[in-house]
Length: 283
Image 1: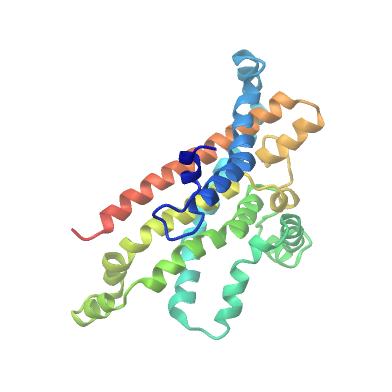
Image 2: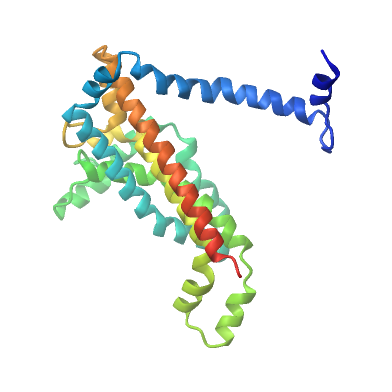
């Protein structure tokens, strides 16, 4: 090994011993477990040629399933913004009794197996469930339709919004709010002109993460969705159906669309976040 190669693995000017060696191992680990599988998914569907790929994409059932996943994930992420903001505000500023327990319960949807979440929601909101039977009196049906999908995606996506906004609210200095209050500003003026700008990038981040998680969610949705083709069938479930039918080109085509939309949404959210973060900085 040459001296130049040996120098690469030394810490150099970094205060962390073995910085370059640890960086090399981290990049190799990331490439093997993340970049390699994703690149394989990008390449594999095109092995049969563009005509086979376009034929697999030209499927009305697949398009309906993709539309169900994308629309329900967007609605659920949008609904989580006000709910997540209120919860983050209560945790950061409320000092309510039992706030530590509530803080722990926020992460429960991330810790629970998705199948457990789906069974629980289906039991509660089913036609004979505790909440489903009460809603049925008013003619409201949540389970076995798109409303159930949105409800399940809200359940699993809420922690992303709360955890993105809560640190910003905690670190936001309250001196400006107190000064605005002393100058006669109303509460809604304080929120819109002082608080909204700093937390807007965090809200955009929470929305993007909840949306990206929602379009790929499977276990918590299938038990309450009804899984009716062209009505309440989600794209991840259709991937499983195509694999059971040994239709590997169709399954990989759906997976490729989900991957591209997830990457595109995260890139757009990152761009919007940086733009609004620069806009909120003082001149």
